[in-house]
Image (tube, rainbow, N blue to C red; front, side, top):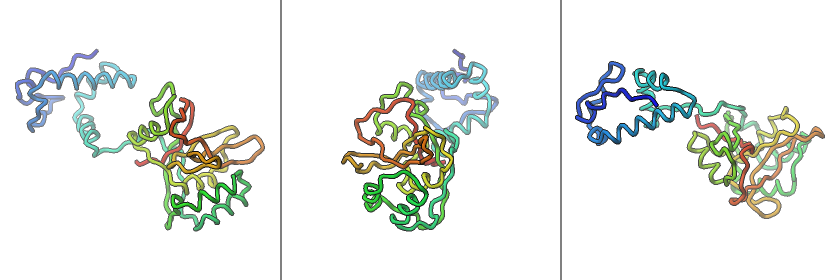
Length: 244
């Protein structure tokens, strides 16, 4: 473990310590008078560097770099956004399809596999809205494991909450439909759920959409398990909107 070099004695006494040649802010903080708590924060930071695959030198480099330290402060205060996950796809909304019937017709004409009668019911509900203007939506595809649940066994509420903490958001129902219409090269046997507000499925239980590509050449948009008590495996894939 790296030994912190933040002039701990100076911090405890409330005098300006220097880090990388720059004086720390003189704004009074309760932590300044509690050196032990401040030291714990430093140790927690170093541990996070190690968890990310870093070492002592990486931790020292960050402490000595004024720009990095300022960026860390901005990040903590919510003034700096960054991409936790790479953008997987960018799709378009507001493509000229203006009604639920327009979407159903486009899916049928495109030869997509859907549950027509049930789909019509979902799209006729108040939760289905359509973008009035052209807009691009950035999407991220992640596994439950990549969200931090390495062993899986997590409920949909836990998945959604963790995704939100990492800068991701729920998709609209239109986003799920447009993704199906625009994602024409989905690999065979690929399957993933689209993170939306749950809706009533064909069996009368809460569902979400999922997309898959079968070996018969048909691209499907079907209902997937959205039951609040269902436990998802670490390998399960989800698509979210990127809020960055």
